[in-house]
Image (cartoon, rainbow, N blue to C red; front, side):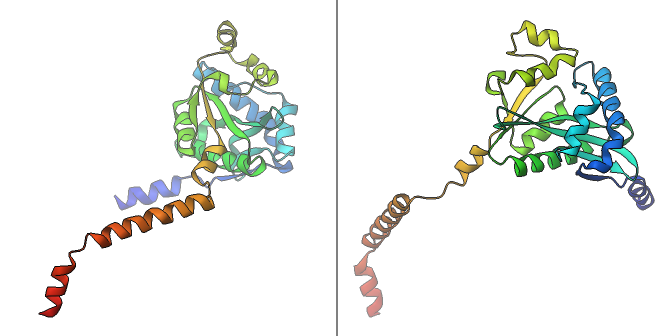
Length: 230
């Protein structure tokens, strides 16, 4: 048992998940090929982007890459819509040689952190057919929504044209598809952490004082006096 555990730990790849930079531009073609192959495997769509588009995301510091030494392991990039009021973490992909290590979750978490850092007030959203991605999104605080709650930016929906299910989206007038729409609104957190107003603090204090008076009046003072005399 100990031997097997040591063996599995030794086999676990040493993968770095980091914000992509200029030094990672050499992986662009491999990233796109991996996205395309994954789309064909699933029979559902991850939209393939141009070499220039992926390269621009890396150069702008709007992409997350996973690497093991000089080997590409995974990728995700950030897109903004409606004047950065909506942000999407798109193209989440893990190379088939690195699946089964929880890498998709690590990449998604890093992309979420980067998105929140760059666009703290934006709504984060996504479309996915993957149950694993839905689970990760739920852990991050995303909620399933109708397509009407997502961005209405036509450029976003044009990005679906290279998806194999684009005809379904058109037939449904962009109201539904095989993908599930999910959204995270930072306003939800703000409501949870909303500071108390002076009036609310005063009201709570009055309520507390009222309860203290009720407790005080309920004391049987005769018994206390008798006990005190003994």
